[in-house]
Amino acid sequence: MSALRIRPAGVQDRELVAGLLRELSPDSAYLRFQTGIGVEPAPGLVAALIPDGLRGSALLGLVDDRLVAHGLWVRVGASPVAEIGIVVADAQQGQGIGTRIASALIADLAARGIDRVEVFASATNVAVTRMVARQAPHAVRDRDGATVTYAFATPPRRVAVRTVA
Image 1 (cartoon, rainbow, N blue to C red):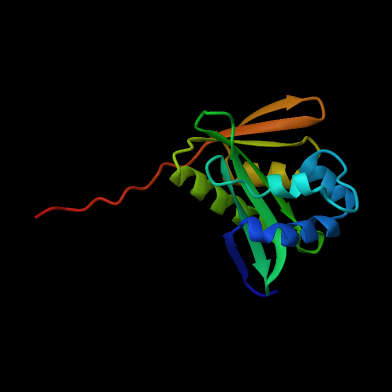
Image 2 (tube, rainbow, N blue to C red; image 1 turned 45 degrees about the vertical axis):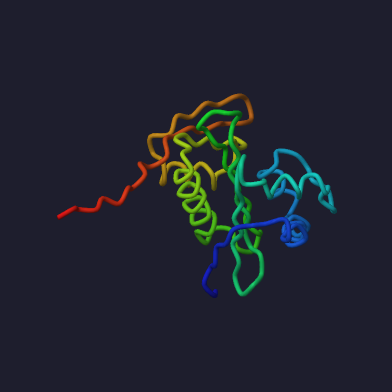
């Protein structure tokens, strides 16, 4: 497999994101969105996956210029908390792409002053459970029936310190 390239998403990427959603299996779509999205994703859904920058941000994962992953973070109200969501094309699942997108999202939101992350998923989403266990082992897990929310702090921001002579 060629190298994964991660870049910010913009409104010009709506059709690209819609194409990724069209290709998802019903199981993958359900695990990401907790509902069926149908054969043709609604324009409102696609637009919501590319937030305006003030309330969130989206990243795309590309291999050979083919979109294979989408991730986003969105602020939870006015608080310094953001929810993240990731989807990886069926054929590329299990290759670490979701973890790389998650790391890039968390770095981005931490740089913007967000200090807590929430991940909402189906309790049966093994990929999310494993990813959170590896990347945020101290996450607080709150199960509510068929869903679970993980919450954890973003890593501390690194600030460059210049010595003055």
